[in-house]
Length: 131
Image (spheres, rainbow, N blue to C red):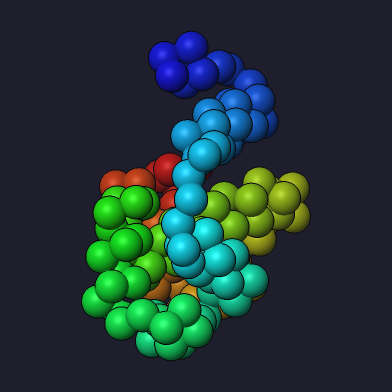
């Protein structure tokens, strides 16, 4: 992990981190968690109740399984997905000088302050300081 984190090329760093974490999933089998994650990726607006109903489990069971295996609730997992999407969008839009307000709407946040608070809760920094 230290070798990966010392990588200077940001694109290579992201790729190596992804590969590392994917190796941790090899052999992991769960009755519904993988499918639940796929559903969230397909539709980030899906609710915990909808997921629980689809997989015929209680919301509490769904949340506990997320916490047990991902160390995150479904809501926290969604925040992380949005954060990753924000990073990708900011990287792509960096040449276009996209404003945070525009970016927040592109990423389906209610408003700019909502995006900034989510960003800050995950990184400890507001987007401008982070970048």
